[in-house]
Length: 380
Image (cartoon, rainbow, N blue to C red):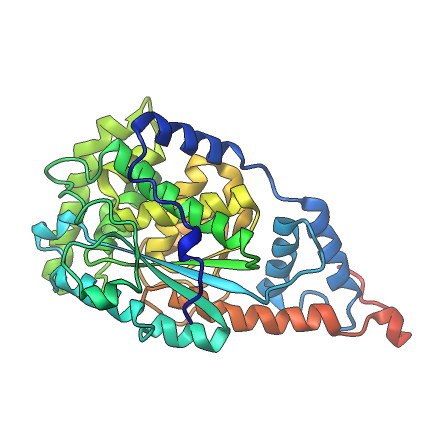
């Protein structure tokens, strides 16, 4: 279900370094804590509803979190938009994937044609789906490419075993593209935003970002991604470890890690844009649903940049990738769905929407204890 937000999303590619730094600083500077009073009002509403307390589990808290994000206990989620950031990663030169970069272009075209897994699921949830080219390496069919939002910074990042994946300007362009998607969605009246990604090699970049920010062993974080042999996984772990070690002197000072520099050194355009989407959600006060492992690595970077961003994020599912659990523990978030998902494209985030909407129906419409003339449950 493709909508009309594409014309609202700014293009930062002609900005100077000083302009990019200024706008980035202004947008991050907008981030303040969520409205906890609205969240508490929503929790009181839950306690008044004629059912066992907390019986809808994590989903009840998600509704309360949406209330405090928007500052309004009258929660709505009629309109949603999914932004899928597509880009290639130079680290594929290191044989960390079983497919080539041409697959990124092919899948981006499918998303643009509104025929992807995410597109079919988007129609079921009434979600507008947008594909953005941040750095797809291979050429695409010009007729199809018109359905993709062109924000290509470069045809793929550099191999992070040779040099930083991005320049300082490039990483800010990618982050600001994400923040502007959040702004455009909020101004268009969206109630929720979701982030997805498509890019061969991005479980390697996601693992590297997570390892750097968590100061974790690459073997604990890195998984097989979209299918890989045991031998291939051992090689991938080695590549992640070497990449993180190579750039540590750039992104770490006296034990303190600069998340923007981590993204620049070992991330990808897609992960940087997802990070920007979450920062934008906090800056413009709109709930953002996290997808799986790669999106969670981006969320970890966003929260590292601006800690209050955490309050604006809703986890969706627990990916099978090794580092997912560590990231969620660090963010103190618990995904409601555990279903062995590892598809990407924001599909796991889309799966959360029907659960949230069913929960919201109870929140908005269910009779209260007072209305039924019975005594309310008391918290134990």
